[in-house]
Length: 267
Image 1: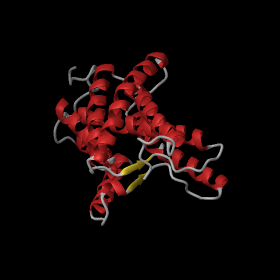
Image 2: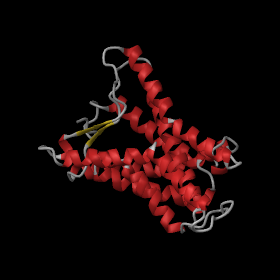
Image 3: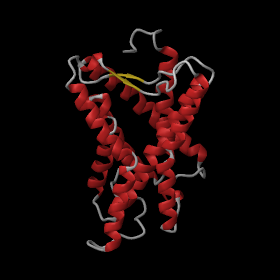
């Protein structure tokens, strides 16, 4: 695979130009309001975990926790609120692209190739999902990872739909922001292919560090693979599909299997 994009950005802005500086500021603002801020929080969280009196494997990294225990309708309202709020950076990116006289379509975020995008996404998910689970179990066994609990939702009728919606929200947010948008802006600023790949992978890994070293390394590798595939296909939708499938299997699988199989850590 080549690191050269399938189509060059509209133009590479000249070094030192006001427009180039503004794009850099815009990128920092978008990341600071979304996954960049999550990365900083993850670093603080992991530092806290390292300085605890107990080992990493004895600590829990909860995902999709109940937000109003014992009050299922309020809990559901909070879950839907956070899912919707989590998509606002994507709306912001879409707005910024419209101001650029284009749209999210320039990132390949559309439904024009539903079947091929889904097929590619399923193939990627099958490879990365299995290897990611093996890396998580291995790093936890080695003492480098917290115990990840993908679902702490109560056993109510909306549990599975909310877990699927959460998986899809994660996929859309991450692939639009740290794949399509980040790569477009860095390309426009004249960054080299390898530098863009490393930056995108590092940002993706950073906001998973709260899980431990396995979360960091696994997601950096996934990020690098996703950059290469995005360069090849020119579309984020297959990667959105892959990410959504990976997270759906992780979230729903944990909810259904936790406590019923011996190989799945539950904290």
